[in-house]
Length: 241
Image (tube, rainbow, N blue to C red; front, top):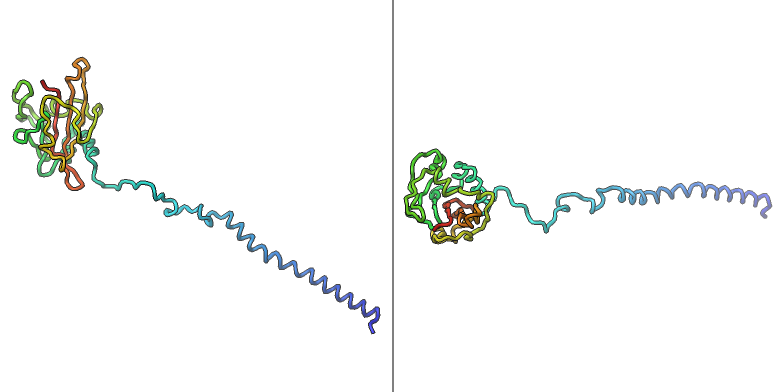
């Protein structure tokens, strides 16, 4: 038979067990809940864990953006003409010669009508030192008077090549004639458009008092050589009576 003393002992033991359970159970809770919370906070603060924060080349590349032209690509006719015109402006025969057809050379025509039988052709090697050449060449006849055009290359260049500021003031067109005088323009007959491009530089007039009768054009003709091109013709044109 249980006495009051026995019940007291039971109560004391139960109280001690309850106290022990309260002091040990909470100690495991922080370890079980802290790890997921810590991982979540790391994911929010670590930029490398977010796909949006990635700066690798594959993620940052725009697939719809146009590709940049590759270095070393052959120039277009307009780009080639701009380079040749710069050489003409500077009377830089070495740079000009680099563009000339390696086999055919470049033909110089003083007027719109290209005459393959009479127009003079210069090779790359000849061009490089031709500005210092004192030889009087025969360049066909002057329009109107019919007199023989007997000029050194430097004289011809000044009168029938770069005789206006084509590099600065001209209107530019690809495979299209801008200036039209009384001289027949047969450029596409001598230089077929299937195998050639020409770029025209045209100035409407220089002196307003002559009402456009001093217009000038210079046509640079390039032969297509695969994806490349070479200068084969320099055709001068102007107002003629």
